[in-house]
Length: 239
Image 1 (cartoon, rainbow, N blue to C red):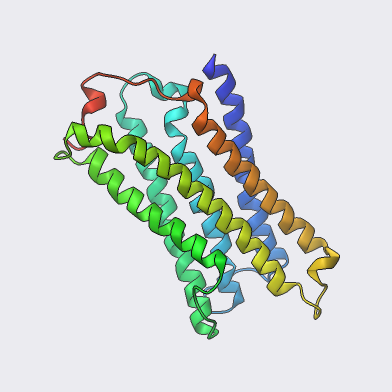
Image 2: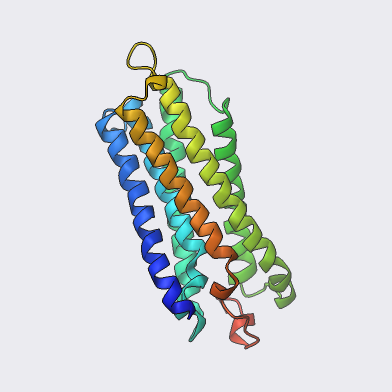
């Protein structure tokens, strides 16, 4: 029963995630001038693309790895590797996104870390970094005791949801902030809802839908991996 329900849901979620990335890239290319790596606004345009792709879509996929019904049977090792690889790829993109925005700000003499968007984003990145390091040390290293993995597992799951929620909030507030800065009386005011505003607001709604569906899937008891008391389930990856 969970297999029948989960796979169409996963297809929907994959479509939404793909649309989030495509919409972000199209917005940056069509309305914001495209991409470069030269300290200009085109360098900044990499920031939303990397952050939405890494911190939201890849991370959202990573937290759902153990909800895939085929992960419930057979060795857990491939799924651990997939979870670790997705989160590591997400972290790599997040670092590139931070380099893009700080590089742009420093080149243009714009202050850093003054807005609510930047505070939310930094909180998400710092928690994500701690989450990855703690997860690696607790679940993958051979000297991690079984009792620590048992205690830390619900904490790890809880903060996984918190990080995704912060990423959603940072993404949506970032879209809003960019529109307020870009759509002024010198162009077409944001209040008049020009096509760019419609498009970017729609992107924000896609991000909201994607994130809420991931959080809903995490809360579904029928889609949780059954607890195993086998020796394999209690062993770290690297042993």
